[in-house]
Image (cartoon, rainbow, N blue to C red; front, side, top):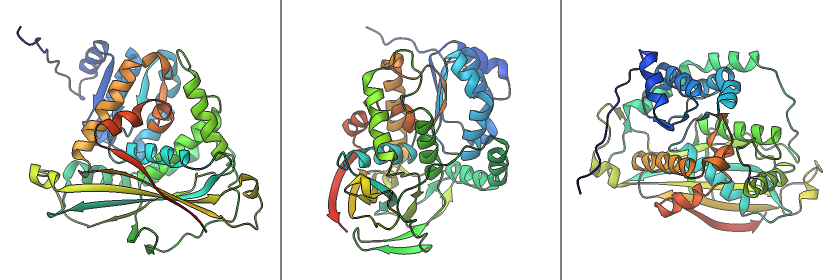
Length: 354
């Protein structure tokens, strides 16, 4: 039997009508055409208007929050899910944090979680130019992001129980996990905070087409931790060999020779009732990790496709529509199991008293 014929649809971000025709003929768009600050909004608009779901891979905070401000209400109305940052390393960060929380006892929880990213390779490590360009644009748009946040209604922040953690230095040594870390600005901390903010505003889960008990249980679990743990404060030191970016990207040998490891180090209380007492210091440390034998290029493809498959296969149990971060949408699903089946491991490392 001959293989099914595959049809190609040509669309151009410069011509909104072509994007509208594209979105009208499918259930989900996976957008890999960045930087999204330059090319993403017209595709988001077309998907929202048609009720088509939309996922993209990069983490551009200003773009993500601007899309939320512009399109969230209409996306809810039209039944379009718009989910940013469905790639490396945002999905491993969000799912890794959720896995980390699940390793604390029911009555316990962290007040602080530090995530460490280690990229390792037997060859010279380089980055793709598109990643570099998105990072440069992200820095350039920092002022616009602050203006956007100031323009929105300010909501009261939740108090974080326990003593405030020290900010630490730019470079630090973590004896327990045996590494030196360089603190770098990361979009992932913004994404995790937005997930937590959405969770706090929707303690019973997001409005779904057919809300299920699993999603309600997930939100309840996180809120139990969130109520005294408040891992809202996410520091994200990254430890890796600084290299060059190139437009040609990595060769297959360079990709095959690399690995990534993310360590999540949480400090908190074995008894949650101790957290609100400001004179008490955390008495427990839990360490978990997420790993894969490749630094992110193949991982991003795996992550994006597994997110799409999870969404397509179980759409009725997802929120009806809206602009969200991946953690709040995929946290209560089987995405973690899908990722583990495709080589991304989530493991418990250790638990100790402080």
